Image (cartoon, rainbow, N blue to C red; front, side, top):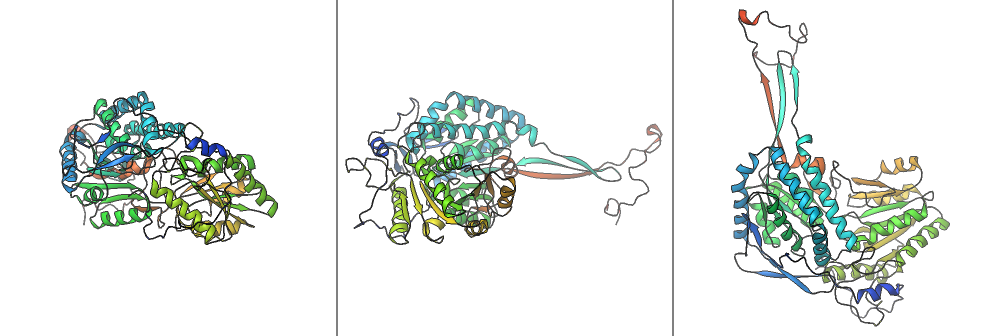
Length: 557
């Protein structure tokens, strides 16, 4: 559910043409020896559903193996839930809603503050689980936890930023005020690529605002959130306030359709995001569904080449390219001399990338289907569309001729002749950078604007005027200036551009956008007649006396 499937694509696997593989030997050597870290001592390998403060097996006792992308080993089993399991999870959340929402925002935030502290104490265990089930390197896994906790920390401060407002709106003592109320039971469907961070985009904010939550982790990475619910329980979150529903498509559809689920959040592929948002809207539910991306980076001749190339490599190869903010297309603007300088700098830096799960290395992609998808795009670009492979991460680069276990593919750089190539247009979700050289800034913006996605874009320049020109013309919602992964930080919200394949539904996720999404504003207009009688003295002069308030219908027809 969290990535595009390609069943309609004929895999170009048989009778591959001989190809020159430009590959650093260190990448191949590291792949054959890398193993995932052991799980924390108290981690559960059987990932059952969690509701009402306890774990329960799925009704039909069906499970799916959880495998590590690092070496292909089975590291656990995850429950496959059906509609009955959905009903049980939502009923648990509905039962807990009244008690949880009746607490003050401050009281709820204090519990989430204790959860933040516990996560800090267990951050090494959380990071190890992420490496094990997702394949991130150690520093990326630690960053996954740190960024998630940044959102938790912001949620703890919601009592200070979510307060209502009051304003005198008319003469005669008429005031308007508003307050926030929780939406109710909310469902959060999260992807495999950030097992801790993305759940924290929604969970702590929804909880502090008084909602109860049913969280549906990706069935590919269920271990991390199974561990997290134990920390939530230890922090004092009451039974039923947070529920974990494991499984796949049937679980998601059941959550969207359930009458007691008032709002749904989703992060994943564009096709699923569009279907889910449409389904929820037909049922008059609040929904935000974030889809895929095709993020464009533009390098100008005045950019700092060394700094820009380092940032570009980190953007497209970090997390094995499995993030919606990853660089996918590099547009190099200028003459042939600058084209060569910029492209050579990116290629040389990428050659230094090693495989592994230690800090500074590049991990595997999530599974065999992801690896085949990435390889298909490279094959298709070279064999069908005439692109040149400047650096090849496909399957022939092993020192002994035998691929290792796990799902490894190295960073790949393609130089395209046409901006309409598939790898230039479609989301690959892997460590592949497509480069296209143009002469003018206008050409670069035209290519970026033509993308059906609208998630992120970045300009590399040392000129403020150039930066302003591009950020005023990019057709994306999250923009960077010399920042190849322009993720907004709280209180700013995360989300792509409306009207594109990157976002469907209502509002943004995290930050201020999540505060609005997970609450309803109740507006109250009030007027108290002025007391009369000798004990109250003379009436006070009304503000604005002598000026007729034509918009005030109070007390007259």
